[in-house]
Image (cartoon, rainbow, N blue to C red; front, side, top):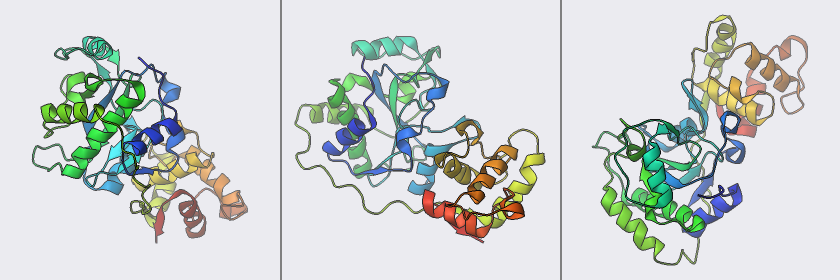
Length: 310
């Protein structure tokens, strides 16, 4: 049982363990705390993403999707071992799990079989998503396995936990299989060995080359902005909408619950406020109608980390 690490302490713990860490966008304030508390924390949970590619996986875990809003974890572990921090606070990663498992984690005892889904895991666990298809065939490079070992050990070390505070998603929630393909007995042995040694004396330097920026297609975005307000529900007509909505949230112009991939009337109004702002171009009248233009969108992308194509 412990109070969650602050963002600064989490970052320091990971880097002190020798990990290369990238801070993705506004990760420090990206959370689901409005849906419930985060903490006390009891352990570290490891997942696989069922995706390919670092940039795509990081963006998905930061934003989530229409059925499961982000962040979907606290950190994404890439194939090359780089850890991308995408959230701090409550995250949609663990879901409902078995209270018997939670009690075993708290007591640091062997885990029982998970046969119930009656306890909120998002409140009690740190979560790391590892880039892997989860099909049993996608390889787990040594650099990625080493990063899992280091990330789990870093948090356990910070809280004074043993390896028994590290678990898989499959240990927690019935029906889950992740992280499929990882030899868990071997991973536990690695973490145990690392916890028996001092942390790295020379932390890895922060990565200087960020992942490739996501791309927003202006024409598709305009089509979504013109079509979505009249549509029912929250259809995701173009995935780039979520990238723009995330930027508007980071700019303080759109409430996070409306970042749903649907360029509806609330998003149109938020984008209009961006167009009228000095940073967005100080547009007025019809030029600030909330329908994206190339200049205002390019300005938004430069400030919040995406590129624009016609």
